[in-house]
Amino acid sequence: EDAVELIKSKKKPLLILGGGVRYSEAADTFAAFAEKFNIPFVETQAGKSGLESNHPLNLGGIGVTGNGAANKIAKDADLIIGVGTRFTDFTTASKLFYAETDVLTINVSEFHASKLEATKIVADAKAGLEALSAALEGYKSGYENEIEEVKKKWDQELNRLRSITFRAEGFRPEIKGHFDEDLPEYKEVLNTELVQTTVLGKVNESIADDSIITCAAGSLPGDLQRMWVSKARNTYHIEYGYSCMGYEIAAALGAKIAEPDKEVYAMVGDGSYLMLHSELVTSIQERQKINIVLFDNSGFGCINNLQMDNGIDSFGTEFRMRNPKTGQLDGDIMRINFAQSAAAYGAKTYEVYTMEQLK
Image (cartoon, rainbow, N blue to C red; front, side, top):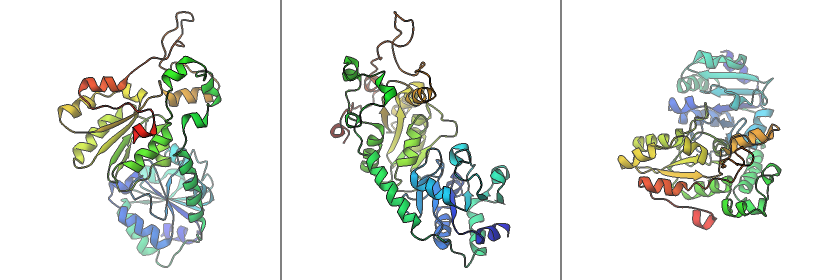
């Protein structure tokens, strides 16, 4: 009753599709609720692909690693309705988007339902939505064309991110100190036109609609939550609760065992790959085919960026040789051929430097 009264007093509510919607198998119920009351929705990492990205009310990922459409509507919303979400700091952006906004929760966990001083329905996602829908007869949100406008603007940005090339974009200032265009190591190590967002766009566009992707750590989960278009349900499997480096390949094997008729792709950086890739051997042993898309930037690039963005030089995050002159790890970049390493296990490998090779 409190929830119904709260929603009826609001004009621009926003639904958050959390992992609980997937665990409850409540996708159809969630979609029917959003459509019935004309309420747009956004996705957490755990909730993404709970419904297809092309649903007209789906604004995509929210929060720190979310996109412009979702975060614009969240900032302007007068009520946040979190369904099956834990409201982590990534989802709330530490309350940046809705610090003063009323919150309503539906969660089977009373602990998570009670967050953000919310009006709470302690219930399974599907059962809670069904009960709330029946009690809300006659309600409609006040949205007009705002949803279409923000989605159109985000599509323009998505197309830009999918078409960046390394040389055309030039160097960020902090990178230029490490890779000068005139240095031989640039030509040897960075002899590529490919950047992460462009590769993700091409892979997303090229693989089968029902393919499953896995990921866990670095900058990849952020780019994926922002950019990945889920064309089928339950095809996006990202562990981002603790940014578990090394989870990616083990997860891909697990997904393949669960869904043997689908292609599974592990999106992994070279840092995470070095942390743990032994399940690649297990996948070969068990004859379970998985696909690994390895992004090689010669280091722990996400942490490297965080270090330099906070005012210090890179420290132990680039794969460089120890320099005998300085005694520090600021020597030549290590030449690690990950494809050869995987080939030694028995995997079929490709080294890719251009968009044509990627295709």
